[in-house]
Length: 403
Image (tube, rainbow, N blue to C red):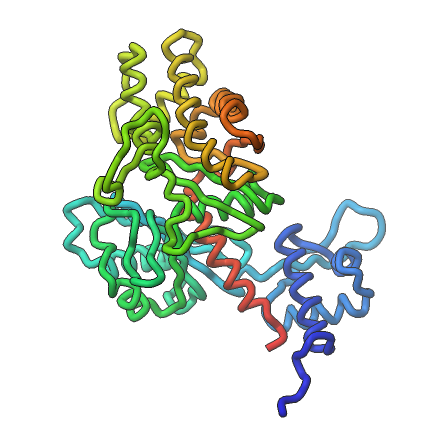
């Protein structure tokens, strides 16, 4: 029969718990003194000293500078060793793969963008992934073997029963049923895959507008309209990974779309997706329609409408808010979330004026009344979410001193 070493309550496990608590405090607060760590953890000075010596010997913390400008003698400060571990994330779109590497503290240390326009569709996806990853690893001054974990964010979701990517017919080359096995064979580190909008929700939950919230919906609008559902603090993915694919939602005010997966669109996408904004602007008599992709044009139009004072632009913002609230009302009625976060350039560009209009309309259309906020994570939020996801598992592995 196995011994009891490592069971809850043993000194080994208690030490590991204290070690992890101290490391989490250093991540949250930055450099701390032994005395401060003792106060925050409730440990005695001798125990805090032993803890720091143990973590320093394990290469998990570094002594860095001293306290200055305070009464009394200066004290040694400690911080998490940034080189203790590294994680990587990929943000995949039809146009490019954006890759980044972060150290254990969350600081991005390398980034690389691999264009993947139509002419590159002959390049195998596995090679695209490894090329993008290698570019970010090189930019970080590291080697592939230095990366503990990789998280890949894509539109749609990989069906756990078939291994095929679903709900993303616009992503060429990613639909082979053997793709995940091929990636596992080509990558030297463990990897996970996640829906891109789910990763944005993760970034907002850990770093942005949804911090401290266990039940919220993130509505995302750039190239496509989607949502992420966080229930009880956890992402809800659904049976096939398709939870939150709200672009396919039938809604009043839009024609009923059939065979939605073949069309890669649905009623809510047609009514309130970014491609609907330029069309609506023309209907309202706005002639100066920005050129470029729909998401960029929609963002510029809505940013302008949020600042303008003429009837046409006010009408654009008001009508678009009603369209957004029409689909949100269904989500709110079913899920009753505490919070709704608006994300993606086509929503954040409207700022507070658009948010306030959607909030007012939603209160007319739904019985429950969650608070609406604009997302805080604006710079590559999918990539940031991928890194945060990869870092969470990496920290669990690297910071586990009980092994």
